[in-house]
Image 1 (cartoon, rainbow over the protein chains, first blue to last red):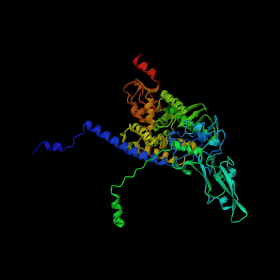
Image 2: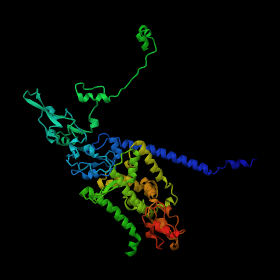
Image 3: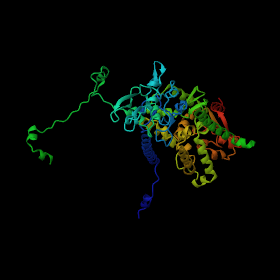
Image 4: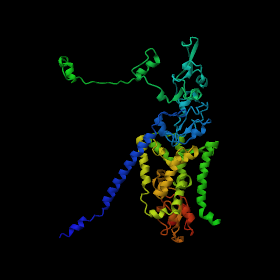
Length: 272
Length: 276
């Protein structure tokens, strides 16, 4: 009857404006989807914490944005210590790292890996004292001793890590202690000194146990932090920390109920 | 033999530079050569000239990294170089992924997959600019160089120079994608590095020039071109290829039997056409 009706049922071709808006919406939608997947992936692959970087490496979060992944440090290393993370290594892709149990850092005095870095991800000033490169102030990590598996702590004589240490007698010292079990021997316990240790990993390489009892962790993972609440009052240097100490104010809301109510009520009543 | 050389001269030269550059980088890592040290992200030429990937540097910049002088000089060197010879000359003359995608493209034609899919491509070539923009947004928000952590170009190239790991999977993914999913898929649609160099190449001096009076409309050039939208003037007008998406691979020049295509310098062309 009505001639207009069948025409209305027909699908109208999209107007150009509608097409444009829908196209844009689709683009934005796909970009959001892709962006989230991409971000999630990048977040996941850069989350590797237990990773030892070359000497002079800047803080890990800055390192991840500054390292251009060129491998110049890897090529400069004369001992093939440094590796570039490959797909499948489960480390941030293309960034340099080393595994001390395989090949430790041999602490070259001229530190060839650092000056070649084009981006400053390996920071030359951080390994320079008085205008000269100084590998002894490098901070790649910190050696940690597992006293349970270290045979020197059992009483068996071993000083492999102490002998291997390139900063002999400073980064690792031997502490003598009477062995009460035998009554006539001494424990010769290796002690790591965090201020001198560079984390080169020569001790980890030298350790005689099946799985090393002394190993390198990134300093961030191997150390705690006392915070500003605890100061060595007897140490003038440490007292200076007070100057920078921040203040945290915590406020607990006072109960509006009168004290009498609390005193007179049955305790169990409050609970149930 | 002479026609063989004539028909493939640029292809042979391109393979020579692509493989040569890989060998030089590999030699630097394996045997301590000093001609070309590092990799395509950043390197030094003859131990003096620094070269850095401008797209990687751009991601670093938006991620908030402190830009070192060596890096900036390297970026300037590479940017100037590609400004002169055509941005996407990187794609066809340097990038190792080009060999993978060219192989996929070759096989695609040989086994007839092109006929199955037809001529209409299901994806836009502008996708790469979207991905380029997205990579910069993610870099800024996450504070890392977003594309550098997923880049199959780096995986393949770094893999060949420093050890592959599972990098072969990246090669296979790109190969299969280009072979079965999308013609010129990676290099012609997705790769944001290609997109970046397309933008840079807008200003380049070396161009492919078409002379319409010689053209016999055989369309061999359009068939062989990996970015055939840039050859819109074929048989219509005597114009240089002005789009930055042209990779200067010169396949069109090789397949042309009528001397209708050739390399020229941009400013000279302009003078010729406008009579200035």
